[in-house]
Length: 153
Image 1: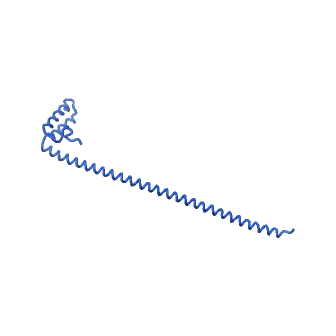
Image 2: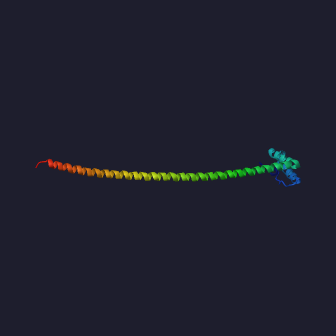
Image 3: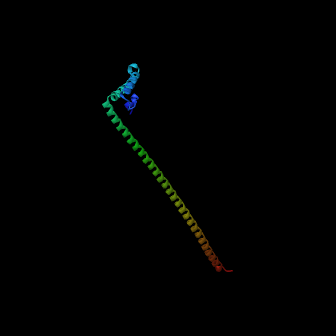
């Protein structure tokens, strides 16, 4: 919001004479009959009406100060909200990183377990092949001797 002081281009500490002088200068410049914009001229008139009356000026100053305090509180709240949001984002990033690390650890453990299971299966297959080979030798050797015994020369 643009304050009446900004409209007239004066400081709140200026005396009534400085306010009148600024009003006259701006009124001449922005008067609709002189090619100015009517809305700007109305804003200048309203600002002068408030600031030229001592009672209205005091009320306006109190209202303006309350508005500034409110804006400061809102700014402080906004900064606090931004700080909390940044903190939350940081926390989520850590959580995501920890989750990612946990998932990678689980995947590594699963891969290791799969490799161990593969090795166990391979050893079992080798053992089975050795057992089959040994059984085949025993069975084959004994059957050939039986055949030889049954044969007549």
